[in-house]
Length: 341
Image (tube, rainbow, N blue to C red; front, side, top):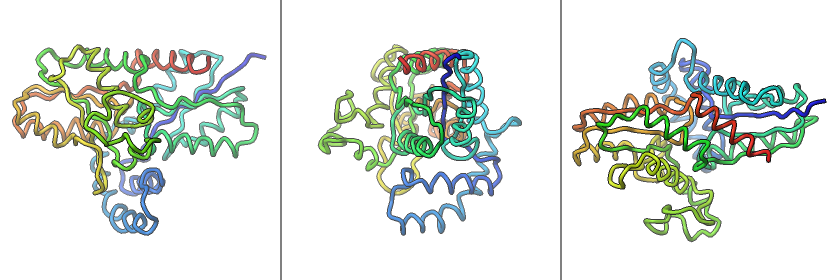
């Protein structure tokens, strides 16, 4: 009997619809994760139940409606197409499942599907290029919890991050070259933000993270799992492959949520500063996302575009995420095959 492997792809997830009730259910599940809102139980309960859930779903639903398509949520559409394309690439020796960390299809549903297919081994691949406690770590912890409680669970392996792997960087470069016009005079690499304390928590030495201005200039043992350091490394790799001069690109972090300090610089402030410094033609890439979603389509392609143009910019180019393009599927195929060697 032929040996069959299972591949479980996972991304953040999405509300079932852009209606407030579905957005509220999604936000409740997402923000109840202690890895996402890592604060004291009393303060967290008050923040979640008295401030966020009563008011934010309606506002977020309006934003989701701006990016929702006839087929549904962009992140779901692209993730499903990616899984389908990868399944075709890998062939009959693989069974590919898609399970979101929050919402449906759930990770459990995807894992159950692989078990029913009687795969002999499972490769779990969270689709987050850079490691973070609130994305990669929580996904791995949830997967391992499911694995422990699953009957007939086969052996498994985990791909933890791929922030500078050619499987990710090469398709990202090719995509950028197709979308960034010659007229662009600056490229902004906008990564999802994180609270500073979450980044510091990944420093095993306790003496490196945020201790100097150049703590993220290179990857070392102390910052091997530092999200900010990995993001800087991704940006350096892409800037090099795009042949950008040092003064022609910037890194920033978007989507901050609470009032605690988040890693800087902030994307919304960086956009305005660039316009005020004379940048007229700006391109923005979002290399912490592999699929377009609310944070890229609404926050960047709509709101960030408006902010930059209002601040004096003349042209704004949004570079879409890798989504389900052929180079990305081929890159993932290579990454998957290398991960089982």
